[in-house]
Image (tube, rainbow over all chains, first blue to last red):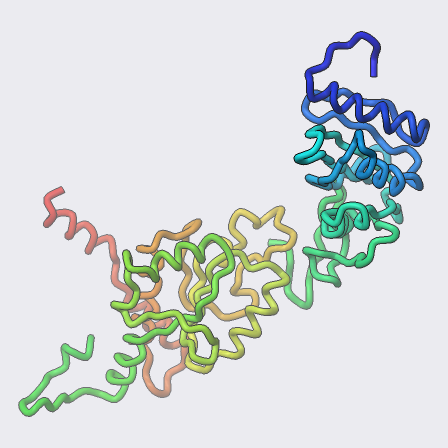
Length: 172
Length: 189
């Protein structure tokens, strides 16, 4: 957070929340990005992600009690895939922030937070289904939309659809 | 050639062929299977409802494939759903008809190129008798398609195959354009 910068009210709230997280976890999290649409920070030390999530949910000045969304992203140029978690404190402190996490594009793994926010359970399965990263500690790490025996992960930028599925031609 | 065109003699005796009676009975009570897959199903439901009133054709959705004559594939068939569609089709008793409703089940529709999970035409897995174009087709189009199924049934005879009946239907097809133009003229539009 730059000194002296003027933010809108909701970004200031997010920046205050980030300051508490940064104070506790230090270098495990990146600098704050005061994006006007959705302010965010990145978790650098993935091993700390579950602790950060619990801290964010339970700290009396954070109370991020609601995971609004969990999306996957393919950073093809960096050789990474990631997720973006949109968190809100719904009905309590009414602030919000996004948390980004990245892991290796092939065989990468991110700690699951489905025990912190139950919403994450199906969202993490969807991110796995579309991008192929696994979530360690997830209670039910299976595909959620594609058939179990589907080949490849459809939302990767270099995805090529399979020729046949159970003997039926797939491309047009 | 409808049944009522056949000559009726005195004492309510009706002289016609067995084919005619059978076909008339079948085409006047086509029971489609009540299942829909996407937005086309909404249009199909609207067609079933009172504004378009499919029951005047004797068409009434059934809840079991075992009681159905017609399968209206109304909507996007995903690869995952395709196997279920085949299973439902196989559970239907013969003679059975398939009407493919809308662009998705005709050829993949808007998902034809980037829809990795969409079956590009339901005719890849089950034989289709009538295709109804549209995205989704209006109830009038669906009724047109259902009347085409009725025409197909009318073309059938004991001992001829479905392929022959479809060929007969193609040879005896009526150009609806002429009828529409005539109707417009009489309406004085």
